[in-house]
Image (cartoon, rainbow, N blue to C red; front, side, top):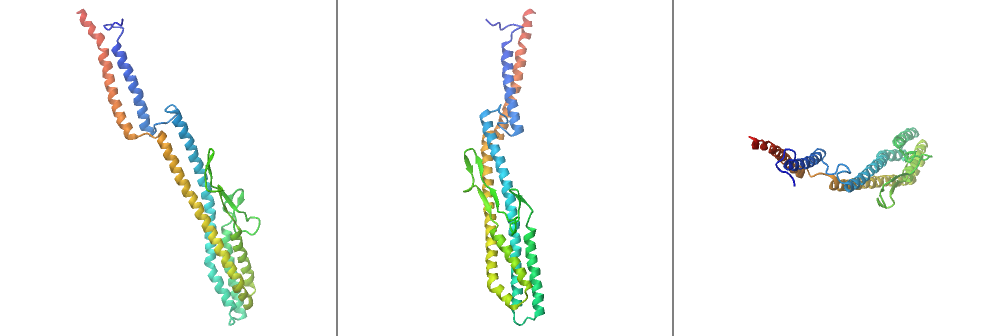
Length: 295
């Protein structure tokens, strides 16, 4: 039978000490949650929740990488579109010069001057196309969507994020920007440059009657294709932003701490700690009271 009036054994002190140790452990946990903002900061806190959260964090990083890739290709499309728009802005001036050249009242010297102006305007338009070339590399190739030579490669970007056996992606999992329309536009510009050097009314009439209609169709096709691809890439970017937000929200449900709850818990544990310390102090005074028996 336990001796309660002993200077060697003090059950009350042991009980109070165990209570203090428990409160201190809980207090440490609550303080860590408040400091980190996480309810599950490591596998020791909750192994299954931590493993799930780590998997979701990996998906978020994959989304980040895909967003960078898509943003790069969208940049290529946007500055190519800007070049095509610049070429479109010069179209009216080029047409006007051919119209002047076609006039029967224009002299030979005037037509020669107009031919030089056409050549300069077309060179300016071709310069815009060249400025949009070779700024970026995609799939191992320098990008030049206007090139009529070996640099005329289509640009393809993957849009799929693989989640195990499932894929969050548009149909096909990729977006391809073909160079056919932009190359056709650049080819017409070369033709105009050659036509401008042949300064005759007949040649100007032929360009206005035949080539210009085809050129304007090519310009419209290039602008439409680039604008559509830019919008498609933007839509994919918006989708990935939303997808990333949902993944981060799910991570939060597994590991984030409710700081309002933790604040209240921390305050309660601090009070419990103080009471436990006082209980130990009271229990430790019990052996001292035994001295009164020997007075």
